[in-house]
Length: 195
Picture 1 (cartoon, rainbow, N blue to C red):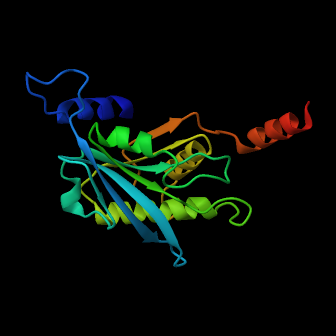
Picture 2: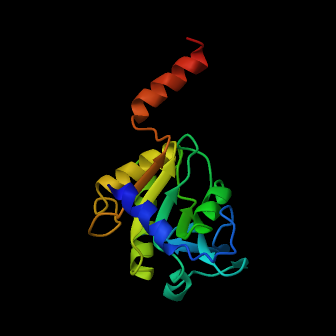
């Protein structure tokens, strides 16, 4: 049901003239590079890819006026086997969504052995809370791929638990999510052991 809403909103937001070709995308991308403070004071690197009239890169946080072209926003959790990746790992995906009218917030949340579970979810919850507070007029969703898909599903299932604030997300989009981390770990152990 939520997918239908997202697709309908994308179609409604596109402003095309008769002269535009079907393969042209309606927006350029404004890229914002900045940090978001986690609950413990850690600086989380972030990138926002926003639909815009022209290509621009800014080293600052976006504000409400920077979201006027977007029909919705999405917090994106990158994949990387629960231990790798940054806010720049899926730049092309973020830019692609932005060129279609979706504001994308991608982050370098903490992960790996030095930051055990649920550290990444706390970082993503803090990022989501920042987004909802800073850009309250956008309908916010969560998305992620692979291990990031797991984080997106967990964050969407209980946003308040992870610090994202009250209320549910407008949509969830996962790309090949790790739905069962234990099964994934057992599979990887078997592959490493050659069984």
